[in-house]
Length: 383
Ligand code: BJ8
Image 1 (cartoon, rainbow, N blue to C red):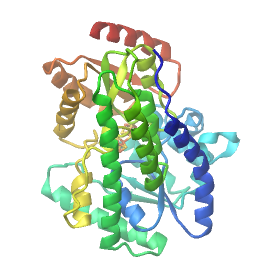
Image 2 (cartoon, rainbow, N blue to C red):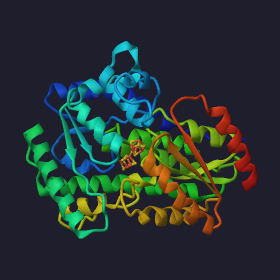
Image 3 (cartoon, protein in one colour):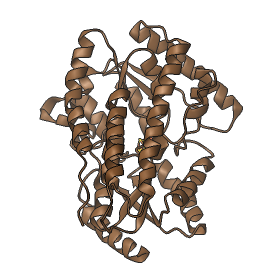
Image 4 (cartoon, helix red, strand yellow):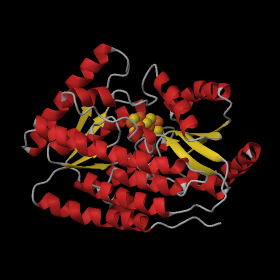
């Protein structure tokens, strides 16, 4: 049975196509554009300073050969793809580079080694501000330090834009981003039915757009999509229910979800920065806004954090909530953090009686057939 096509997904695609023109116009009247690579950069502070933000993470392999002229080949494809795009900056007719030239400043963060070192190189191409992220999320000293870092970011944003970031503006942006988080929860809740009315590939494409569009445009599209999805009585028979867990899948990268769903499985949740990690916990609206941001963002269970038991707890919670029958653990090649965490996660899932398939891959299609064969065997074992 074929899956329902949603008009709002087409609208989302078109919105993205017009985005670049909008940015050009806004920049003409002095609006600044900030590029980011990671969830740990609070969008609320960037928006409160009156600037726009766009994600710079590469999800395609067309710029990797450019990056490999500068960087070692054995680092993760996300870093190579992103760096290749910036260095190339829209030349050679490669489309996935087209918006990098418009970025006024990059706001980066110390997370994994590859990203940290890439940021040092990026300074030669774009002004790059790095948040020093403490990586012991449960320590009170770390929270205090992170709060100080966020205040420094606020200053940097004020300098960039010439605007003062007020408490009121921060509160407004927190409310607005929380609204997006609530809408994403509503969309995800609709996937709890059996079968879910929307595919995982479609959901991934929506989440990927989240980091390109303005929050207002994104929320409008989400409301329309939720409305459409609610009307659907799903009559496809895809099973088993799969959760993806691991590295983010940046725009352009849908390889593994497409394989899962083309083989008959259905993705019901993603424990990923292109999934639940991006919206699961709201920022506390009743607290001092800077402190509330620090408290919320430091809890993002990225593999750069240690210890990172919060991620294991969250994965187990999600498997229950979405009635997950199997987990596909997704790592990008040379992403040591997520790769090493795989061991403890597999142990925890085993204890909970949930089978896991580990896939380590890159952005090329050279391993698609092999992944497909392994997926066939995994899905058959689950059914
Ligand atoms: S909060 S997951 S967006 S750091 S895949 S570049 S970790 S070697 S992307 Fe990430 Fe922020 Fe964490 Fe999320 Fe390094 Fe791994 Fe590459 Fe990665």
